[in-house]
Amino acid sequence: MQKHIRFLSGALLALSLSAPAFAQDQTEETEASATTVVATVNGVEITLGHMIAAAATLPEQYQQLSDDVLYSGILQQLIQQSALSQSFTETLPPRVVYSLENEKRSLVAGEVIENILAGTDISEDVQALYDEQYGSIEAEDEYNASHILVETEEAALEVMTSLDEGADFAETAMEKSTGPSGPGGGELGWFGSGAMVPEFEAAVIALEEGEVSQPVQTQFGWHVIRLNEVRKADIPTLEEVRTELEGQARRTVAEAAIERLSQEAEVLRPGGDPVDPALLRRIDLLE
Image (cartoon, rainbow, N blue to C red; front, side, top):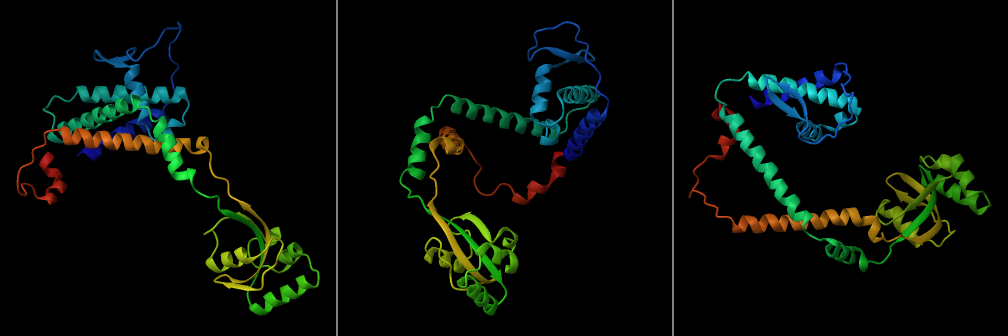
């Protein structure tokens, strides 16, 4: 089965990368290219291009390896695969033939999209997306608040009394708050709309800077809240979101190209329901 082939490929690579990295004989400095031959197996060439293409598809954990280890491991894998594939003298089974056709189709289709994107100027599209998404929005308020969290309303009222009598808010939070922010004086830092539970957020919005709330109940307990400061959230600049917007613009161009080329293609499908969808699971049909 094909899954066994994929497993074997991964196993070969793992074994290759775990083997000692042999020094390459590079006594003379040469100009390398994708066609540079790095090994031959029974007269069949393995080129630097084959190695680069193989390296580009490796999982992330292999990409972190040193160049020497990666080079040795990939070369050994390609040599092993070449030796194995050359030993195959039978007719390729349908699963391999169809897989190769699918892989070629996918790679060529991807190349078409890359060429379309390379020939398309998306700078105006990126600017338009920025204007649409950020140009007319109003900066939202952000709040910096501290709180003292206790279990009961009675305890919260006692905290209020202490604060009214001149107790320091941060010191009281460190002494009495049961929340994780207690050791830090109850400081919650900056947050925007939706970051806190509704009851807490409503209480914060109703406060003036420096003002302390009456006890507020939420699912976590009872809070005594102080609003430290209010500011307007920064609206991202075009440069800050350029990468994200370029991705959106490229997706739009690619989707339009796919739609156009699909519409232009002559597509014929047999009428009715010639194939039972359940047959997709019949791997045995590829034997």
